[in-house]
Image 1 (cartoon, rainbow, N blue to C red):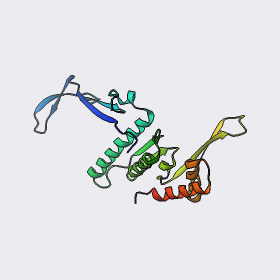
Image 2 (image 1 turned 45 degrees about the vertical axis):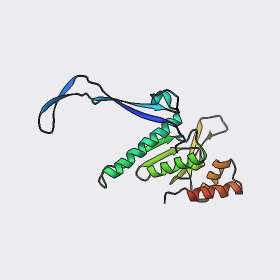
Image 3 (image 1 turned 90 degrees about the vertical axis):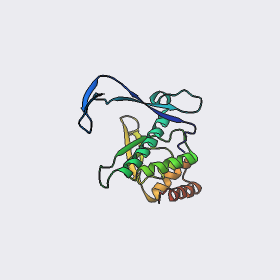
Image 4 (image 1 turned 120 degrees about the horizontal axis):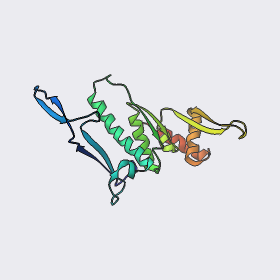
Length: 199
């Protein structure tokens, strides 16, 4: 459902077996464990993007969009575990930033991606850079970033960030959907915004 059908992620944990550090177990018995500032084990995330492709370290086999979606899946799993394991009020919310997590997806997969981001945003602050209306429609707040020259190209580029709300947001979603703000695209945008809710 994150546009990664057939992909596989394996986590390999290898005991380094290096120099031992004396420790005491719960009964006070002395023993030794290979331990340093980086822990006792080496952990490697191995990713196979599609059946038949080689299993390689995640950073060498996943595209930028795949890395973002893998991160989202891991963070959703961690958020579920945190919310079920932590006592109420313990530990503050986390902040996640996803830059073009929707690269290479569209349609139903983009809607599902937006839904999952909204689910993560229930317990954390989530900032998403997206060009897809199907993802942006799930946001609690939407901002439009524009770039341009301040005086006809003679000086530095300026960046403007503006929040869009209400009817202006429907117009922005329509523009993202079809490149125009026709009545048909506005109707579709309003329908998309109305259906993008976890409640």
